[in-house]
Length: 406
Image (cartoon, rainbow, N blue to C red; front, side):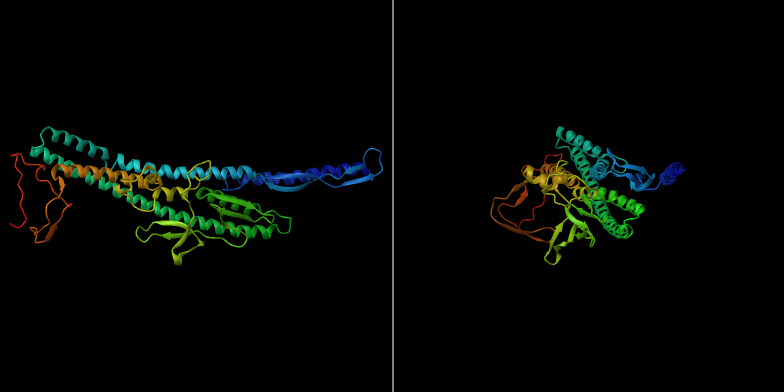
């Protein structure tokens, strides 16, 4: 009778354990569409054994008491989590870079229903006609008209690029705010998880799901490293700097440029703003490379693509390739602005050289008064109109009014 009842007890323990495990399965199915929910898994273990004879020749004579639930765990792999979060950050980085590049492409291909390249083609055609008969006033006017149109369209594109920089700046500000919010959320969840799990009986499954979800989102915004401590607290660092620990959250600050209004993320706890010293979150002196994990996080991509000023042709002229790559060349916005401005600058200079060529004045110093009554002085080395080589009218004459005395 004892053996029979013992067998029934063992069988009933298996049924009870399976029933509880089935409840966990039902909970998994009920949360299939729950954002951030992680499947729970039941771990079963043997109950204690009754020992009848410890002096048996081969092994102790024991009788099992059935099965029980040892633990209910998250079905997550810490190595896969780290890999996923790293690649999520990398995908976010290149997605932000692609969006900026695609926006620039849109500005140049289509502007108010007309392709930007049409204005360049029209200007090229105008110069072709001008080259056939430079003295023809019709050809001269055509060049002036198409040049004015090109300048107007180029200015519109240049302004659009600056507006998009401002949009990126707004996005950077929002990302910093969201990063700080996620840091506070992780910190609060750490405290609640520790309280629930301190007794060693219950696991805060739902809170852990929320924390994992926050870490997933944070990994897309910035490059993070994290480590779960013995008490369940997760420490987080951003770009190698402490962000969340057991004591507090080190929020990311915003350094605003007085001239442009552009925001640069920095670490207040490592900065001395009274002396103008700020510890920037990102170091752009290091090559952007997957080998060094320096191409991770949407925020870094946004700061890099926006740049920290508005570029012009002077960011290209007189610069070596290395100087350019370390400056405007790092940002798709700055490089586009600089190259567009260089194109306009060279075209305008060439057009001016046709209609209003300059030459360095080599005579003695001259003073006089303009038609508007403004006094002027011309000294050696100054640029003045080259009357011998400037454009003339259809009659071949150059008409001008002298403002020099005598």
